Amino acid sequence: MTLLISSITMGLILSLLALGVLISFRILAFRDLTVDGSIALGGAVAATLLSAGWNPWIATLAACLAGAVAGATTGVLATRFSINGLLAGILVMTALHSVNLRVMGKSNLPLMKETTVVTLAQSFASADSRWSFSRWEMPVQDACVAVFVVILISVVAIGMLAFFRTNLGLAMRATGDNDAMIRALGVEVGWMKTFGLALSNALVALSGALLVQYQGFADVQMGIGMVVWGFASVIIGESLIGSKFIGYLLAGAVMGSILFRLLVAIALRWGLNPNDLKLVTAAFVFSALVMPSLMITVKKRFAI
Amino acid sequence: MLEIEQIRKTFHPGTPNEVRALQDVDLRIEPGSFVIVIGMNGSGKSTLLNAVAGSFFVDKGRLKLKGQEVTLWPEHRRSKFIGRVFQNPFTGTAPSMTIAENLTLAAKRGCPRGLGWALSSSTKSELRERVYAMGLGLEDRLDNAIGSLSGGQRQSLTLLMAGLLKPDLLLLDEHTAALDPKSADQVIRLTEEMIRRDKLTTLMVTHSMHQAAYLGDRLIMMVRGRIACDIQGSEKQRLKPEDLLARFEDLRREELLDETAAAMLQRQYV
Ligand SMILES: Nc1ncnc2c1ncn2[C@@H]1O[C@H](COP(=O)(O)OP(=O)(O)OP(=O)(O)O)[C@@H](O)[C@H]1O
Ligand SMILES: [Mg+2]
Figure (cartoon, rainbow over the protein chains, first blue to last red):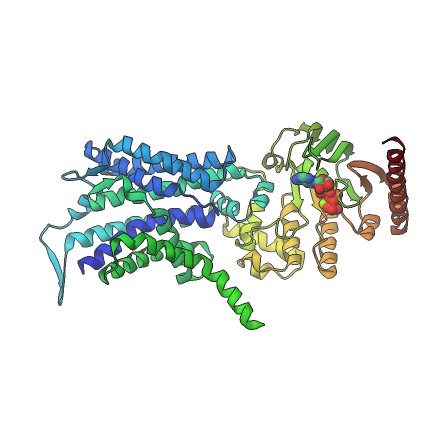
């Protein structure tokens, strides 16, 4: 039970990453690799500020802002300097590795007695109170954290849903869908992409900040492969929901993230070597990317 | 309305594939006139429209719209004045967004876009009316993705989007060329209606001699990046497709003559 709830909580925290990736990957059609750096940046900023005694909400917000700046940098490189989008992301991601080390001052920063948003959520219950369902038993504090994260994700998702129905949000979606068209309607595509990437990476950094507070430590390596996790969640979500409408996409990304995290927990339980996890994830995303076109080819073969 | 002064555009200058797409083109278009542009493939018709819309900056010369110099304005800024329909039905609409969403995007052409609600119920009923007035039967499908429509339907909607805010200048680049004859006729009918009703200043490129002869009140023919003839007023009113074909034939002969003359000169002097 504890394992289940912690996997779900983890999946929820990482669903912010998935929502961020959804903005860049699906809405802007921009393959943004900044993510690996900005999730660690969010973690680094939050952990550093927390251990300096800052209010956890402000520390978390600061992490978001840092992520937004990182995303905007990628946007500026890609649109103002016309660098290939993938390369722009790689450049910023690489630079962020040094930035994160600078921010933290070392490669690993534990959070011991600091007040974090997670300890604030836990403080709604006493440390030794437990819920039990027949054979299962779980600390109430874990449930408090899960509920807190659910509320937070709901607020973010509803905010995004509302944003994508405003004039600005609609223009952002059109930027990814058909940039020639939206340019002819008076939108500066470069600015819109930069703004979208800032938004996307702010969410990713928020995910990193929460992750750090949940795990109780920040590590410069924590971002490695995260962008692929984001892709995986978005892709799973799409196949679960099967609709291109924006509300469904958002719900799908969250569900995809949770499901993916559960799959990982099950695989590890069944004896998957944790060291192989990233390889398996990459293989999964690869097959999800090629499967649709492969299916079409196969169908054509059999049709003839 | 539109003043084009001596504009020039060369693609890939100084390389073997240098193309002089526009060579010192001069053109003045009065408000409310409907100008047809014809010419052979590669004669620079699209380049002319792109230069006006701001898809690129011209190498030389000046462009004025509504009395304002716009030569160095980027495309998104000029869109305040310009409505556009492209040759490819896929270029004018965002396929994964709904009909209503595409139309609201167009309803904000050239305006700043803020956090206001894009599709309030009043906007939606207004849009429904506009779509209903086109008579395509799409008014009940406003929430369908535009990608699910046929090319003709998409092009009609693009036309509606371009004309939604009564643009000061409407640019149509062979907007019926990719459609089947029936849809093309329908789109042309809608185009004519809209231009007449809203008195839109229009620049329309076409390959159809029929359209060229019977539509518009002025016709320009482009040859190798230049305006080769400009027919207006009563002469345009009397113009028949046969006359245009005859003119085309003349021009081709002249060009052929040019080429053989050049070949002769080369043989003699090289
Ligand atoms: N972006 C570009 N880059 C390089 N060359 C270009 C570009 N756009 C147009 N050209 C060239 O400029 C010349 C004029 O092209 P343009 O598209 O204006 O012709 P057109 O009159 O519209 O022809 P068509 O009837 O085939 O549409 C052509 O030789 C074309 O190859
Ligand atoms: Mg053309």
